[in-house]
Image (cartoon, one colour):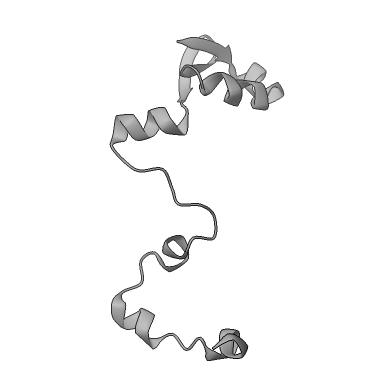
Length: 83
C-alpha cells in the first residue's frame, strides 16, 4: 500500500487520486494513518455496492421518494411543452 502525508495529498491531490486508481493510498498525519483513499472499483468490491449512477440519472434525482409522492408530482409546468 502506498503512503503519503496529508500535506503531500493537499498539494498533489490529482496525483494521489491517480495513484489510488492502482493501489490504496494511506494518508498520514504526524506519522499516523489518517485515511485510506481507494478507487471506486475497489471500494465497490469491498462493500458489495454498485457504483453510483451517472450524474443526472433519474434514480439519483428521485431517490427517497415513495410511489405516492412520485405520482403526485405535477410535471406539466416544467415539461408541458414536451408532453
